[in-house]
Amino acid sequence: MRSHRQRIKHLLLYAITTLITLAVLFPVIFGFFTSFKPNPEIFTYPPKLLPQSWTIESYTSVLSQQRYLRYFLNGYLISISSTLLCVFLGALAGYGLSRFRLPAKRSLMLAILALQMFPGAILMISYFNLSRALGIYDTYIALVLVDTAFALSLVTWLLKSYFDSIPVSLEEAALVDGCSRFRALLSIVAPLARAGFIGTGVFAFIRAWNEFMFALILTKGPERAPVTVGLAELFGQYTIQWNGVMALTVIATFPLLIVFIFVQRYIIKGITSGAVK
Amino acid sequence: MRRRFRNRYDMEGFVFLAPALTLLVLSIAFPLFRVIQRSFQEYSAQAGAFQYVGLKQYQHLFSDPLFWISVRNTFIFTLGSIALHLGFAYPIALLLNTRWPNIRVRNFFRGAFILPFLFSPPAAALLWGLLFRPLGPLNYGLSKLGVGQIAFLGDPSWALFSVMFVNAWVYFPLYMILILGGLQSIPKILYDAARVDGANWIQRFIYVTLPQMRTLVMTVILIDFATSFIHFDLVWTMTKGGPLRSTYLISFFLYEKGLRDFRLGYGSAVGVVIALIMAICISAYVFVAIRREEVAA
Image (cartoon, rainbow over the protein chains, first blue to last red):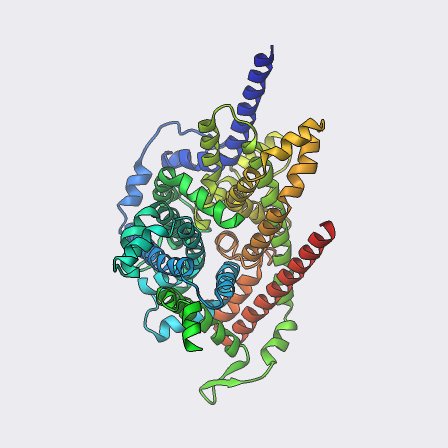
């Protein structure tokens, strides 16, 4: 009797959650199927969810255009460089904050946290001028630096709390034996903090890959601009080739999906531990 | 003295901090200083250089009607986004936090709900642009319900709500994860005690969950305010501020004055005023929140 009620309850839970999930993901589902529709089917009315004849021609046509391949190459180069730089700098700073007694450490930590709420967009005019003055306007360097700067404070904060959870005694033994601090970080702490690096790295990658505003301001055209700029151009064009556009959206989001599936738990752990503390 | 100082602090730590701090100073502190400085200047074609003009840019700004339109829209957008984010994120987090017979199924659903967050703002704009089309699926659904067509992005009375809704869709997963983390850290013993006292699930929610979640929800609102107030990406892709300035946000005003019209001094003043408005709102909010906390305690 009791298990019967229990089963109905569970069934209800599954049913309700499935319905909500489908509603929330409807834009994704509809867009995904649209990318497999042939041209004549895009504007059929009433609109159909599934293509009547499936085709991958929108994918092949998008991927054969030099312009879009360039956007993807730029996106990868910028995001990967900024992720590596960000985790490297964040690991050094996080280690410094975790292992040393520093003057004004509390204020420093608070400043780093407060930086999370800093409205970076108000610096757009400065960035534009500075990047021209330094000769890095419309280069990868400008975007890598900006992306790194804005992800760095959270990455530092998270890695600091990650290092805090690793016992100091391991390093102390090595330090006594004459190992340098840097060496201790590299060969003792870093291997133990791998999960922390993965979590923060994915965070930095997603941020950089999806960044749009600074990419719009600091580049001029497809030579150096990442995918987001390419996608934004398509919106509001007079005739939108929706199947091609959706294919591009799917391709642009696919790398994040793969990364996300593999490291989901690190990200969730990273975000929650950083917020609650 | 010097020796004692050395004993108490380990200055070697700054060697590790130096690279990150250098980057932050060069890429945030210095540009910020330049923006503040520029906001008191104006380019003079005669002198061929920037000259100090005192508060002229600010005076000009406060008498610009477009500035006030953007402020109004930004406040509506920000408060609306906060409400929608919480309205999406809280119930779904509660649902994911109930007792699931199978934890892997729950994790699958959690992953599915996070999916919207993976789409970049322009990508999300395109997904919704497809749905918002005059003859698209949303309008088809409305026609089935007997409601007339809605120009979601073309009608000035709908556009701001539409972009707010899409913004809610993209970013609610972030807040959902934060809230879920908070729910999971509430000690189970509190619920057991409430159960022993005969509290039903509504009472347990009101008397255990809500008060335990207060600080976290306050933090979520703060983060959301700081993010949404300066929002640019998604709405810029979808409407560029139109139709009839109905979705014209303060960040667009900043962008158009500063970089499109290239009025660097004026644009910088806009940037400074945005930072000031945010600082005032956040301080007021934190002040009220802390006082409330004291009264409650």
